[in-house]
Image (cartoon, rainbow, N blue to C red; front, side):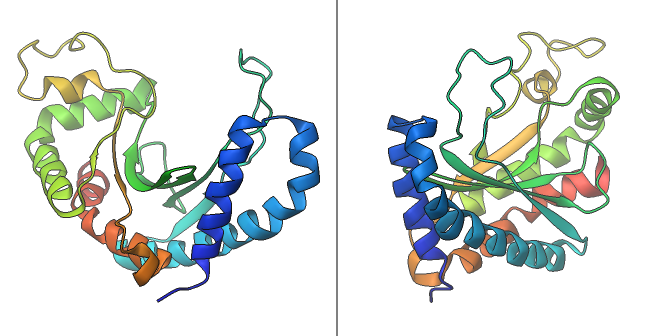
Length: 221
């Protein structure tokens, strides 16, 4: 069953494949209308519809954020002006910095949905480490269940892990690897059946498979 989003994915993947090889204003500007009408506008609708589904699944109202195609290059070595991907984030509408977010990425050769919190700093990072220390078994069990049902794997998205377990935790802590991280994100490609079942249905079902980790975040962090 198609909801019309297959055309959006096809257009996005083809567009971003070309953009990756032609990341210049003089290439993008003549194609900007195509990007807006065939990719961004349908993506905004998809984001709103999946926000409704995520709100129903979790019992918590979610709000979507569609990331801009324009890169902030002020302090970047890479001055390419555009992001060659479509990224969408959904988080609880009244979220604090530790509320888990759902993440969708569509790029050339990529279509994934993930969940987590990343790049934590300061008090939020301290709270995350306390959570791993006291609830690490619960978190690990949730991650194992999510991997089993959705095929999701832990992602290195965000800031790099520490080389050593942070103080005051022991180097041989049973969840040392998670303590070294600045957050947890798990990602999985959408199954190949999404074209037959529909993008929205497939994304919703994959989110449902990832609920054990969402609950571990939401209920205990």
